[in-house]
Image (cartoon, rainbow, N blue to C red; front, side, top):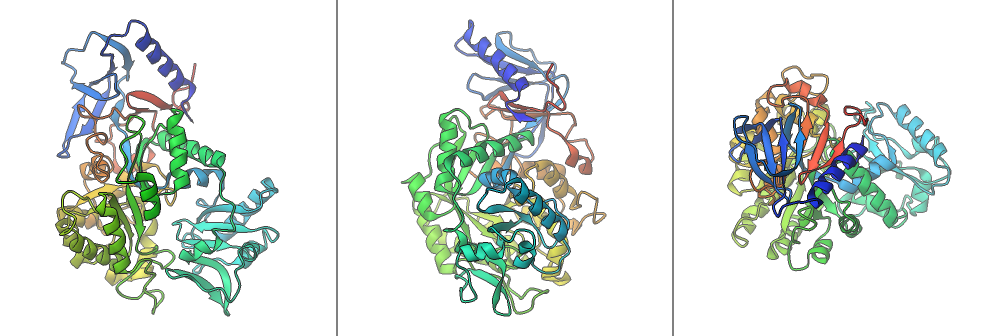
Length: 561
């Protein structure tokens, strides 16, 4: 499976020839003989058998089987009765993180500490000349460790060069002794505000939580532009192979933006990227007086800024109203004070930048809602304030999401991954309002779904299944975890398409296959409205088209002849 595989290239070549030889002013294309399915703005299913695309790559018309086909088309594609659906819009991901995760040490599939150590040993032997070993994806909860891993457990594998491995959620780092030495970390090193250094006997154990990870920023070699561009190409390859045609990039850096622009300038930006800068300063430097216009035929836009108010549940950085059930006395980490949060949100809103605020714990969610309630009287109009994750919300605060017009940008796969850990962190009596998709939707608030890739796989199909069943890949727990929060098929799909587009002011361009929107779509075998929910997990994308042109063909399913 490759981005712009030879099949896609051949298809594009035929298209280009048709456009050049005797092409009329309006060069339409016809996608014929498909089981077309999309949702309309009201969330109702619309079926069609063919689609006309104009020369600008937009949907011109949907046709039923009985409708007459246009005669003067310059390109025609026979779908052979397969299902055609809109491309997925990932409301929250990290594009460069995905690319670098695929190019560095990936521990996301390890089930034990021993497996992680062996993966590190193999990687170190494969790349003996790399000054630092960088990677991530580890999860001590999956390993059943009952504690954080230590530097000593890295030292026995790689004692002679620095190792820096981010936790799966990106909110903690596991570092060996050589890495701490290279960064000048000693027993006297103090954790910065909003961060924590795990210690034993007063000495750092090798775990650095949230802002304490910044202690290594000057020591770890920054990726070169060529490496950034390679990571972007790898990320696009993965996203398109899984049917993601647009993604909100949360935490875009200046060097990320420059890589996006280089790809756009070369015509190599195939996935639509909606950027949220990782810092107010980057937001201003990139956008200047306001959000950028859409660039490269709607492939790139700076929409606003991503802020963090707390950490993650797994590293006990999520900010809670009451102490952690499995660590009494700790309530998490406040990465911004309420005043700092409002100041940053105000600065963004002054120039109509959108704010997307990471909030996982119930205290963090309460603070962002309070900030919006205060700011909405100053900054009027359609602001579309966003809460990213909204994992643990006090039931008393749920109605406030709708009242403030705040969008809940959530990731269904987090629920299935975090279930046991959430029970341990919170205890059984504090789970109301946990991953509460249905309650949020029924309150009148808008949902947008994504994956938080590379924290989770960028594949949207498992997320759809999880949203409908609240069961993991093994069907556990039977009937779903807190099953009252399950969504209907249409509700889940809407959040992953139109809802995600709406969350970034992009619903006029993407999210559904309706007249005037970009013709971003997938070809799959299964009817997504009829297949069993658990079977949705296993759907494979056969083709991905962006702007009415093929950008990915799965050669394992459609071999090149």
